Image 1: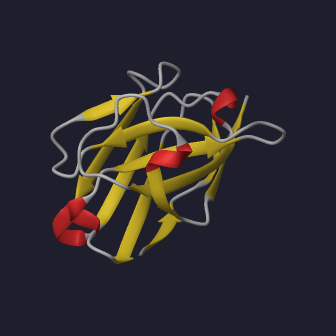
Image 2 (image 1 turned 30 degrees about the vertical axis):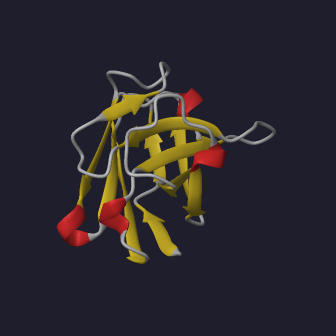
Image 3 (image 1 turned 90 degrees about the horizontal axis):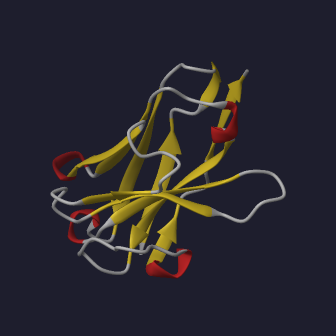
Amino acid sequence: QVQLVESGGGLVQAGGSLRLSCAASGRSFSTYAMGWFRQAPGKDREFVATISWSGGNTNYADSVKGRFTISRDNAKNTGYLQMNSLEPEDTAVYYCASARYGRLIRTPTTADFASWGQGTQVTVSA
């Protein structure tokens, strides 16, 4: 099992940027794809972005495409989510997750991910 710890959340004005980090330990992080999900109050957890084990392939939800960038540094066992042009609708708790496989997941669901972090709050004010 891999342990994941997110950081980098906070309060930002609309149009601003944040960079989330996901530090991994335990089971080999670099062998598996990883992803970011988010959950707003009263809503289901939704997919945001995912990246293959090598970092060579990525996939994004339509709502964040062109604004968010997922990346990873396997040498540091760390994943990232760069969020630009933030909107109030992006307000949520953001979770990183380690997948059950190494390949890029084309239509990710929570069931594709074996380990989850505790989440970090992102709040975007209008």
